[in-house]
Length: 398
Image (cartoon, rainbow, N blue to C red):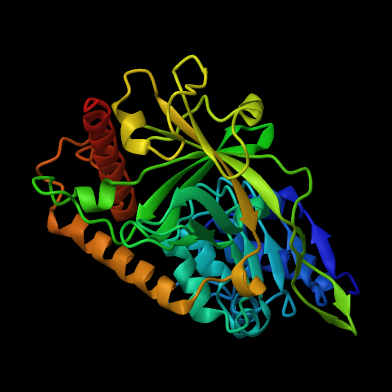
C-alpha cells in the first residue's frame, strides 16, 4: 500500500480485453487495491488501450462483455490509483488516441495527473492530446519526443535583412514556433527512430498550420505539405528530467537544462527526411552554428556558401544540407507551449478533419477506397498519399 513508483504490471492485465467483463473488473480491483498511494507508473512499451480502459472508471454508454451485478457495476465505475501523477508509455505500439481518452477519465485524474509520456507511441496523434489538456487541471507535461529535442534551436539561417539568427522552439508535446513570417508554427505530426537500437538518430515530419500553398497547387496541399528532417544528438549530456521527486513531502516535475548541439539534415528536393544523413563524421566539416552541403556520396561541397540555400538547390551536385545547431533551454522552463499556439493547432486539426469529410482529396489518386469505415484511418491514408504525390513532384523539379 505504500508503493509510490511501479514499473510494469502483470501481462494478463496488459492484454485485457477492450470490453472488460465483470471478472476482469474484479481482477483489476484485486491487483490495484495494493497501490492506493501509487504516484508514478511506467508501463514501458507494453501499454494497450485495453489496459488504460481497465484503469479508467466506466462511463455511461460504455459497453461491456457481460451484464454485471450491482456490486460488479460499482467496481467498474470505481476510480483506481487516485494519487497517480506520472504515466510513461514510451514505445507502446498498442495505444491510440482512444487510450488517451481512457487515461483522462475521472475526477482523480483531473485533479492529480501531471505528466504523460507517449514518446514513439506511433498510433497516438497530436490531436489525441487535446482531451488530456481539456480534462487534466494540473497538467505540466505531455511528452511526445525525447528530452534532447526540447528547447530553442539556434539555426544558421538569418532573418531576412536582420543579423539575428532564426530560432526554432520545440516543446515536449511536439508543438513548435519559429520566429519568421511564414511556415512558422505547427506541430510534429510524426517522429520515428531510424535505428531501433539508437534513439539519438531520428526522423520527423512537421505539420505547418500557416502554410500558404503556391498558386495552382491543389487545395489539399495545405494539409499534405509535411516536410521532414533527420536529427542526430551530439552532446553526451542530456537534460535530466525527474518524473518523481520528493520535496518537503510533495512530488513535483523538475528539469535540469544543459546546452547541447544537434545535427539537422534536410533534402534539397522533395519533402521526406533523409535516411542517410546526418552522420557523426559530418561534425568534422560542419562547425557549430553553420550549415554545409553534401553530394549523394556524403562528400562536402566547400564551394557553396553555407547560407546560400538557393545556390545550393540549383547545384547539380548538392543533395542534402546538414546544419549543426546549438540548443538552448525552453523559454521559462515550461514543458507545455503557450495556449495561443495550441489553440491555432487545435483549430487547424478541426479544419483538416472537416476537409477530409468534405471530399477535398477527391482529385488526388489515393489508396483510400479500400473499404475501411474508420474515419481516422481514411484521413491517414489520404494525407500519406498526398504527401507522396508532393514529394515526387518536388523531387522532379531539380
